[in-house]
Length: 395
Image (cartoon, rainbow, N blue to C red; front, side, top):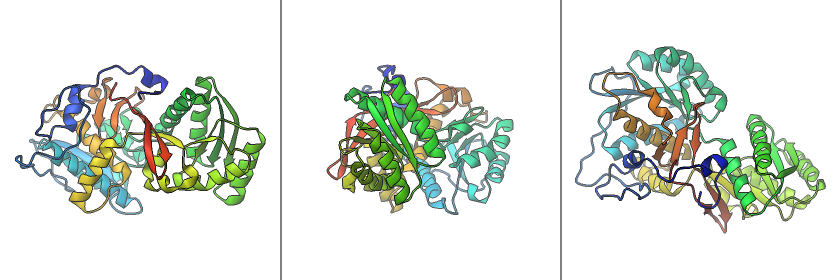
């Protein structure tokens, strides 16, 4: 974050771990300077990639590190799970890796059963599950077996004691965008928050971030997702007096409907702030009411290149969350350099404070097992999104 970083991120060291970057560019034929940022490229034409093994129900062997991918392959979240599975395949192809054997297990038929089957078949590391309730079902099976779980959830309540979360944290996103707003001279804030667990956690993070930056939350209002409730919340906010910025805790499409009501109710000049959820929605740039809004999320520069490669191979656009599957494989490949064949996964390496690098930029796990991420701030501007404060390249 060249312009404004969160307080943990202001302490970032000036170097990024060279080994982490090497994983991202390992498929390139061009020699990349050690100081260059990671560049996403397909394997060189001359190098014929070794097709990875990503099949359900394969037996163990002594020639591969056995890794289980636990995601929903059927049911309401099946499309997301299949996109993550495709991303893991793409990561193996791009790195030409033949040491990992990734076997997929469908959590839609029961996460606990999927974990038990994976461990019985020799899994030494679990990537996934996607949902926090599935993490809760998996951990009583994985923990006694000594198998670490790298989940794609962002529910910090399930982190720790062998569970590591790669999901994008709303607290980190809110802290980052509030820090940026502070550096632009904003000191007073309001909030419009959709009711629900996500909203409750986001509100707590918002109050803490503003307080840490010596700002003031003038009014924080909650609403149900209907016009009458949103209008009433916006009026309550407007009566509290003008503020410099208003955080709207909702998805981008809903926020586009909230903002006009907020403007009409008495906050015509407030800067709109969003959360990391907006980065999952490509349509927000086309919402005129969100023009000028700021939100913080993982950087998109490498993701855009990855999305092109994904579409070429699989004939469809990836889900935004699928990049976590790609990066989880890069992490496993990097650690595999110190992972003797047939031995347990070296879990202590997940706590490497130098961090890791991937499609979603630099990240590392804190002592609670939650991924701390280097985030950028984007602005919705004229039908597109523009990075106004880049993410740092490492820790």
